[in-house]
Amino acid sequence: MLVFILFMISLVIVIAWAISGITIFGIFALAGSFYLPALLFVALFYMLFIGISLSLIEISAWFIIPIFMFLVAWEYIRRQRKVIS
Image (cartoon, rainbow, N blue to C red):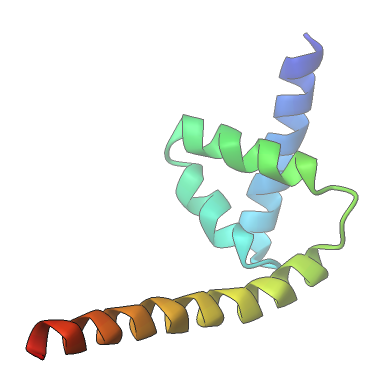
């Protein structure tokens, strides 16, 4: 019963954040709302980070994602050079 109540509360929070579009994770919440297991994962993810500032997560995500993409592109280019030579 407690799990169900927590799930319903987190469901409302996730849908509200998805509609408002306050955070970058709102996009994932909106996508997850059409698929229940994904929505459950996003709701649990939000519950896990309730004590952490969402703006801090969002700012760090804006820095981490481009760096990760750059590293993937760098590795891809490096491997292409090996194939050519």
